[in-house]
Length: 117
Image 1 (cartoon, one colour):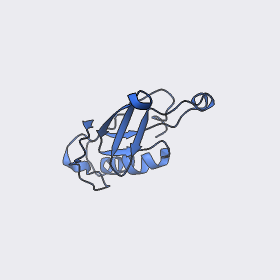
Image 2 (cartoon, helix red, strand yellow):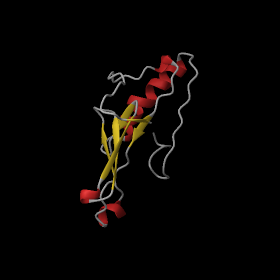
Image 3 (cartoon, helix red, strand yellow):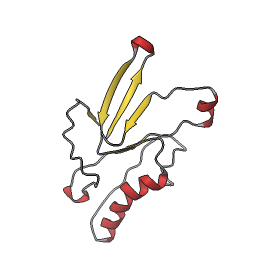
Image 4 (cartoon, helix red, strand yellow):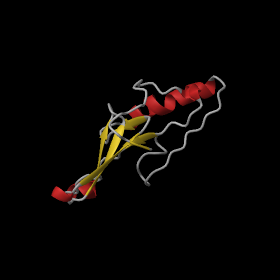
């Protein structure tokens, strides 16, 4: 990820260009699980689909620090598996069927939907 600096130089085009040859990084924040909800856990991340950023929140109150990072595409905890597939994976599959070589690498916590997507 690229550290966000308030001047996002990313192309704001919502369509990722699979033919540009660059590695594209897409991130999805998972929703809080039932245990986290039960104990009133506060999220330590926030996401902006429009700005394509994820913000890490450390500390509490006056001692809170925030760091933002930019990605090629960001999905919030409210995004569905279908959203992620349709907007990120389906275009890659379409290109594979047209003869392009492609790779999708999914990384994340167990049980967050990588295989499903």
